[in-house]
Image 1 (cartoon, rainbow, N blue to C red):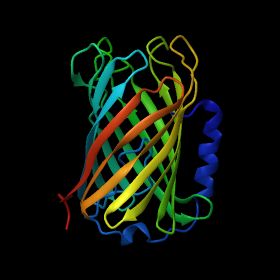
Image 2 (image 1 turned 120 degrees about the horizontal axis):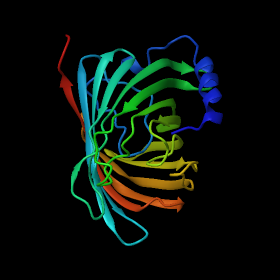
Image 3 (image 1 turned 180 degrees about the vertical axis):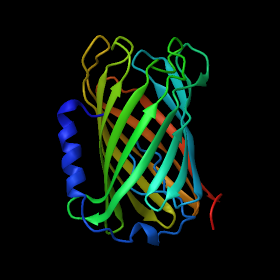
Length: 265
């Protein structure tokens, strides 16, 4: 996620977000799914207090050397308060030439600071921590504990949603397994096509990194349809195509399920 030069931008965005709240998010049906799948980005929305949502799927990757890998990302989202959501990432991976197993688990707290503010509109910050639970030798983890922060700006323009993300990650270790500092930016959108059929699209980038494990930057395009089977159940499928860098070509499919209320009244 973001390199050090972008850290001041997070502060600027937080200052821009300091405006009176509106109740736009609170008017959403709490049992309606709020998909963050299938994009790399997330939106500023949060699950209603006491409610649980699950996002899961499969991504099949084809690398430049012709090898193949699969990943099975799963995220659990718990509404803690009207503007606060706990997220737990439980990925499992089948890297090329290695055994299937669990990846690095993450935990993050999304705090929606404001709704409808000038410039940033709906604005949230998402600090998170990644634990070294995946095998580094099998290519399922970095072997480092990572601390990240993501700035999120979301808005709607008629029926079209637009989400902008900017992030920074600081990793432990000596930089030989993974770069100490990494960055991320995303621009994603979603819009209806016909009835329950919609479309998701995103451009995302991981700028180049430094150090022993440094690598050139990546920019890629994600695009594919979504279908709302029920207000609380949304499925998706599509492709990821590299524009620059070593991003593998990929096919994905998955679902978002708002399970319902598990606490409170």
